[in-house]
Length: 287
Image (cartoon, rainbow, N blue to C red; front, side):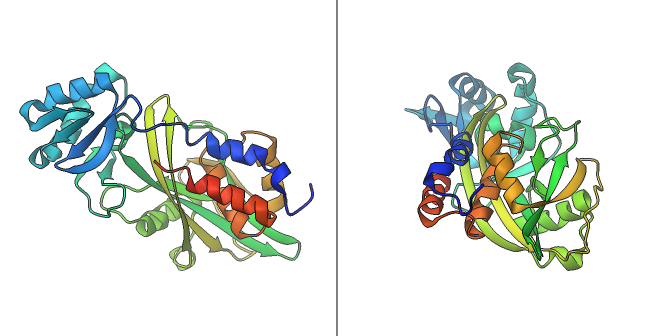
């Protein structure tokens, strides 16, 4: 494989990006708001059940449902009540419900209900970078075979959802300790380098994900340790191998491709025209 890659070589990478931006919004969904603030999108059948649960606290107009702010504390009760009918599982972990461009939390919602309520789910991803004499390497995780989502696929060194009340930085520190036994003295050196948004149709519903991407330069002597069972193993890969695997197929978890493409652009593994095309594609994957 010749480096840097040119426009004619990046078609599989563009396919990975496009696979994460399959949702058209609103499409056949209805936007829903807390008060006047838009927070999510509901399929028509779920919107009907949503309005039925909240009664007079949910007002429906053309293409939109407005939930009274005073009723926002009942979202998890609604999710628990509607889960059996609509086939999603309550997971016992809350995410903050926010407007797309706001840090202010309007409510909390169980993580298992996030896709069907069509709200944004935030997550962190860590590129664990090692600079060796033969070039840049990344620590790559293999997901546990018992994971419900994408078992056995390749992943970033660390990743996880941002639970209610936590910042991305605090989430990263927690997940780094739990998943890879990275000490606090190391993880505090990680830098936030990118934010990637996408809207994707999945069997579980609408994924409107916001990925906070961090880079961490790691010493050669450090070896991560699978600490909580979510990761089967870790391996240190040269960047060229990562590119080869991504170009060849779908062995990485679907959204990890986006995080790695962003890192490879910044690490200058693409010719300028190819980098520009990829960057435009990533910027277009908003939801």
